Length: 324
Ligand SMILES: NC(=O)c1ccc[n+]([C@@H]2O[C@H](COP(=O)([O-])OP(=O)(O)OC[C@H]3O[C@@H](n4cnc5c(N)ncnc54)[C@H](OP(=O)(O)O)[C@@H]3O)[C@@H](O)[C@H]2O)c1
Image 1 (cartoon, rainbow, N blue to C red):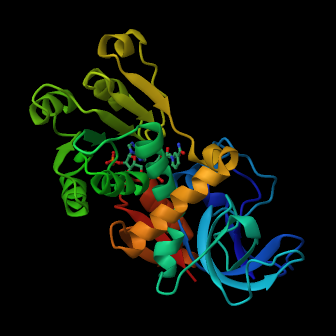
Image 2 (cartoon, helix red, strand yellow):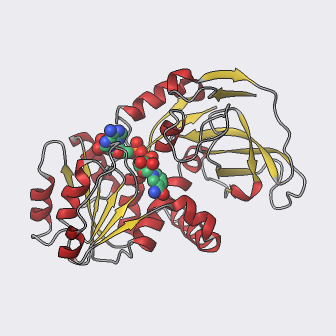
Image 3 (spheres, helix red, strand yellow):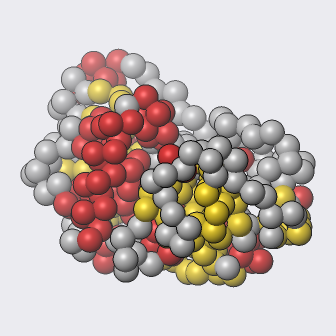
């Protein structure tokens, strides 16, 4: 097998494509031949030692992938050789093969393309949990999605539309705003060229958005929160801009609003039953054509460094997928 190895977590340049012995699955594990792996923002942080989870060195990055099971370890009864699965195990995906815990593998129905499957779990699970569970979004409410053309942003637009909400998508270029419209956003704001607060006032008749989906952080968080509606919910999803904003807590008092943390990974570990029900609903929505990841482009696995550069320079619209 071959894999991108991180021996020294000082950034993407230090990754090397190496030949390694193909491992055999241990108890509760499966060996997967990877067909596709998607790039998530944490994949960028983990190779720089900036992610909350710091794997033992050396490790193979690539949190999320899809492929075919080639061998099963002791005690694995629910998965079979030849079956296709999607898996979000945190590492291992930027390779030709990986070992994965069987309990993290989601068997794929026929007709689920590997690229879509590799780009599915992280973004849709995060946005479903964020908007519908943590945010209690209701039909007819207005959602502001920041970084709306990125991975989790794209999924937030689609899920908010399934929930019957009105979506205002905010992104940094006109091209990204046009992409958000194609995804179903009702209105868009280019937050590089337009004043976020003025436009929100205009688009909501002065009321402000009921729910704010915020995977960006930085300066936009406070601007957005100052515009939130009475009883609004500001969902803290991530900090792609780098800076973790500090907001004066009196702003929450003035609006009767809530700042709500979202941590889908821990939700899935602490509340596995609720997570399983949610994943079933997401798979059903995919089968019904209600949600579908837009793939920015598919690149060969050997082009991982170019893929990372594209994500780092904010060029990606939707999801970037690497294929073997
Ligand atoms: N809480 C959770 O459970 C959870 C789960 C998954 C992901 N996340 C977090 O969500 C965030 C987004 O993840 P993602 O995979 O959707 O990433 P992504 O596809 O790269 O999207 C991030 C978006 O953030 C915006 N952005 C603003 N400043 C940026 C900067 N300096 N560098 C890069 N992007 C910047 C970009 O949109 P514009 O160019 O339009 O501004 C970009 O499209 C990350 O912080 C990730 O860790 C959290």
